[in-house]
Each structure stands twice: as C-alpha cells, then as structure tokens.
Image (tube, rainbow over all chains, first blue to last red; front, side):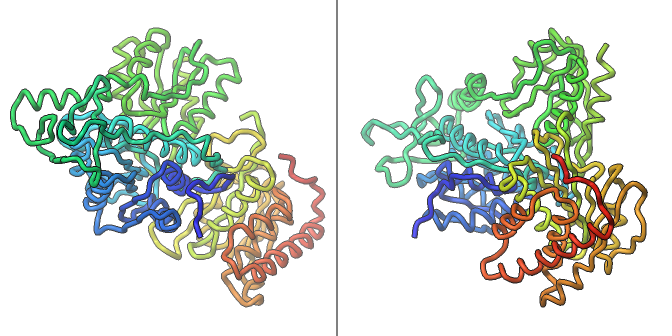
Length: 383
Length: 194
C-alpha cells in the first residue's frame, strides 16, 4: 500500500507536524535526528511518515551525528533534513560548517527554546538568531527563514528545501516553541501547486567535470554518489576539482564565492510581509511568534488612525538591510520586539545608519510579548 | 482587535488529557465549524503530574495574538491548575470544574460556575482516562462555543481506532449532564455569537 507523499487537504496540526509534512511534500526522503523538546514532534512525524513514502528516518546517537548523516544522505542524492532545538543546534555547528564548505544542500530546523544551555526546555525563546548567522567558525553566507504560523512551517520548509537546492547549502528554518507547538488549520495544496526545485546535475562527461566550478550564478552543479563522476568532498580549502589546496589565493576565491552566492542573490532570497509601511512614522520589525503580537498591536494602532507599520521578516538571513536603510529615511523609530536580550536589533540599528531611533523590546524567554507592550512602545514615538 | 475573539483555557495536571481535549476543541472549530482557531499549550519538563494548560482562541476573523489573556471559558481539572492558571477571567466568564478535584464554591459575579464529577463519571464508564472527554461533552453543552456535531467529528478524528465506543459514551455523558446543568442554572444566555 502506498501513501501519497503529499497529503492534500485541511488539517489541524501543530507547526512541528506541518514542518515534517512540508519536508515530505518537498521530496525529503531522509531524516536523521535526536529527540529534543520542542522539536520532537518533527522527528515523531517523520518516523511515522517517511517509511510510508519509501524514505528513511534514523534516530542518531546525538545531534553531531544527525548533522553528519544528513550531509552524507545529501551526497547520496537524497533531500535530507534534521530538526532540533538550541542545545542540539550548538552540537550541530561543526558539521553545519562542513555542510557550508562542501556546499551540501539540506535543511536544518531549529525550534528555538530559551537558553543558554538547557535553559527552559519547554518554553519559547528567539535567542539563536545570531547563532544561525555566525554559529560555525569561518566565513560563509547563510539563509534562515522564520515562520510565524503552522501554515508557514509547512510552506517555508518547502521553501527551505528549494533554496538549499538552488544555492547548495544547509538552509535553516528558525521556528520557535510557540509556532512549533501551536496548532492551527494547515492547508496542504495539491502536488501541482507546490513548486519544487530539483538539484542541478552536471552535464559534461566525467573526464571534464570540475565538481566545484561554478558559472555566473556562483553555484556549482552537484554530482552525487553513483552518478559516475569522480568527486572528492573535503572540509579543507579546495580548488574547483575538489582537492585540498591550502593556499591564500584558492581560499580567497572559495570563500568569496560561498559568501557572494548568497550576498549577491539576497534580493531574490529575501521575503517580508509589509503592513502599512507607506506612511508609517514608526515601524515594528518582528519575526516568528513575536510578529503575531506585533501584528495585533499594529492593527490596533492603525484602526485608531496612527501611522504605524509592520515589517515582518520571513527571511531573517540574509537580512533585508536595504529595506531598513530606505525606511530609515522616512520613519522616526524602529521598534524591535524579540525574545532575547537584543540580537536582530543590531542588524536594524546598523542598517538604519543613525537616521531613525532603534528601540529594543527584549524578553528573556519563557513568555511572548503582549500586543499592549508593543502598542505602548510605539506610542512613545507617535505624535 | 476588530473581530470578537472567544478565549478558552483548559487546565489540569499532566496525564489528564488536557492538551488533547484542547486540541480536539480547536480542531472542531477550525475544521468542522469554519471558524479560525489557535491552540497553544503550556507545560513543564515533567512527563506527568505538573500543572498544564491548553489555550484555545476562536474567532470568525484572523487571530494574530495566540495567547489567552482573560478567558471567557475556564475549565479546571486540578487544584494546582486552579492556583496556577485560574487567575484572570473575562467579565462574564463561564467556569467549569471537575467538582471532585477542584474546590470552588463561587465565582465573582457575573461569571457563572458549572460543576461536573467528570473523573468519577469516567471511572464508572470503566476508564478514568476518558475524564477529559466527559469534560469535552460538558464544555460543548454548557458553552456552545462549537456545535455537538462539530465536536463529535473532531473527537472521532482524534482518537485511536477501537476506542470510539468508550469515547462516545464519555462524550455523551458529559454532554447530557451539561444540558441538565444549563437548565438548572437557568442559563438564559443565547448561543455564543462568534
């Protein structure tokens, strides 16, 4: 009996389950992970669903191995994913760097809880934002998406797979405990309404194939195990052939490409949701579950005729610095509520270049902002 | 804040099926009543025994903020949950309790109190574990936030195969008892207009 990969229909499921369904809809057929609250439901769902679609779900000994396993699966030709929360995300960092260096498409879901360390296992945090950007050593570009609802956990997991295949790197879905554990109606569309990106495979004969040679888009084609090409994959600095070349010029060329393939395509990657930005004097910049409180606050103020807008970051990395720079010429203040002691606020402040006030509304974790707190913060800057 | 929201909080201890009950209620609204519903939960690291709550927000409009601030419907199934989650109430809130597990004689006017021995009923039906479903039936009859049919469909969509008969009995028991309590309380309020 075969169960379809895409369960077209309407469901009342939580964000974690929706993410797992998104992965399967995107063609993910390999999951390796280690259970951790509040991401366990993703692994549970994958353990149930992947065998139904001839996929493989592995519980590994830890998160280091989980990350290694999905890199291997990806080089074997599979679309692969892991899911974790803060402590596991920390353990994955070394192999995330390997994935960046070897340009291995895969998806890492981090359902953020409050840290550091074990912190508040069952309660919400948003403090892994900078870790997602800079957590592994060395220079590389990253893509991270921040869903605000179970529907977006589904949609953006698919987007994450598509981006990972397009730009060849591990892509992060940076959810949070509230969105992961929240249930809402999730609509899974029919297969023909779900656009999927397939991996760009090499054209030339094996003799002339250079596995790390990229064209104008800066993204090399990828030959996988069994395709008949000779491929050497290493975490060492490597030339276009894939062999270690430990020199400054080769490193210069490689790192520039790893960063630029994201940096130069930022406009195509970045997605935001804009509410009332045209005339706004105050703009709330928010992401994840916090954006829901922010939206309620902004709607409330706008209903009273106040010139307030919301810039909801759907893509948080690369950061939409150009958007902020342009808005800064028009607004008095950016209000940045986040469940940490200040992370994304630094990006907003940097991009505003001193042209507008940047105000942090921090929460240390375990709770979410009330709309009222955001309303009051915005009102201070409204005439 | 334009569309009227109904905030519902269920609270008890881990193992009572509070989270499942809240999930079924949310599902009934979202899939079988054409309402928007957001279900969130709060619990500690303990597998069982700690106070836990399930919050459901219902609205005809879009629901952005997912949390329950002051519930119009508060369901309590343990003493500790009453102390942890029983604090804030909306003006005309309906408070539903398992009368064997929660000590509560009055609620501030004009709130109203409804009592059911849900766990005792469940034990009589043979399985204490269906106390949450007895309570769901009670909620359906007393609050009318979703219809009997929608809740029954959501219930059947959520429980393991082979347990339908027991769960339906539990649901019916709570529902019948709730209808009785409603008329006993002389509840003249019209159905919830969402």
